[in-house]
Length: 122
Image (tube, rainbow, N blue to C red; front, side, top):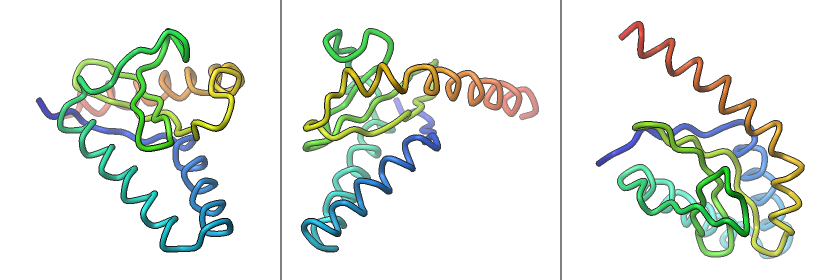
């Protein structure tokens, strides 16, 4: 079953950082390939959110998907998938999520209110 996919500001910020770093380190072609892999993963998640898993060692609060060397950190609510952020596997994902968790939970709350509001007007 297809889900509605929403990407947060945190996701876009991290993705931009990953792209810029990749261009600097390996060139635009490799950076574009990373973006393509992320886009393919997002499409897969949209088509089948069951590919997302809770990995207790990363976070008991969020669902994850590994796209090559990047963790997509998500929140699933009914038919909605909110992609909260993306983190490279070389980073300390647990510590970074601990830092980001209050902001991510706030984004979930704000986006949830917007979604509920827009669904009520449909």
